[in-house]
Image 1 (cartoon, helix red, strand yellow):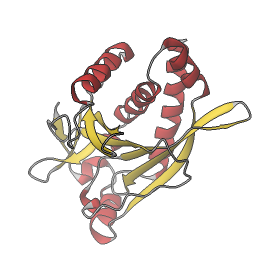
Image 2 (spheres, helix red, strand yellow):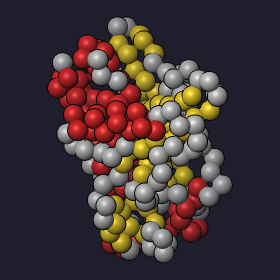
Image 3 (tube, rainbow, N blue to C red):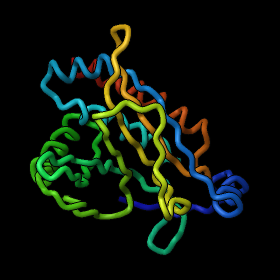
Image 4 (cartoon, helix red, strand yellow):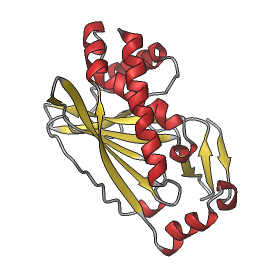
Length: 217
């Protein structure tokens, strides 16, 4: 997948980029509820894995905004990818460990779902991490903690101030008033991503969940 180098000036936010990258390195996280009432019901009725459906909506949202496709190349140059793919955790009950599997994204949900099922079949039983070898920097991480509901979640990375791809964590379902929601924690680097960008992304995730639910119904 093509990587496009870009200067901080070309970002249109050179002063902000340099401030949060050099003077006051800063990452931040936000936790929101995503309403998945219709998506969960549609996936269940169709026999589709809910997590795959949610992962599709999340990945489509990420790919729709350049701020979430930013990274550094092997030389340390700033840039962004044409497209990025989700790398998600698979839990192993017997060993109580997890491994990483990534799936190539496709705008066509049926294609993405087939890719997801094939990757789970080929690598889902492997206990090492990563189970599916990485093939480049155009991946972003999605963790899932289905045993707990949370209202905040923070990852403390030793080299986090040079980590530009977003990090996502999905929590346990919560039901209230006939609606179902999942907590979604979003962690980003402030040099390339402001609160407005995260807010727009969250709105996109919600919209794509609703659209996919209608498609699956």
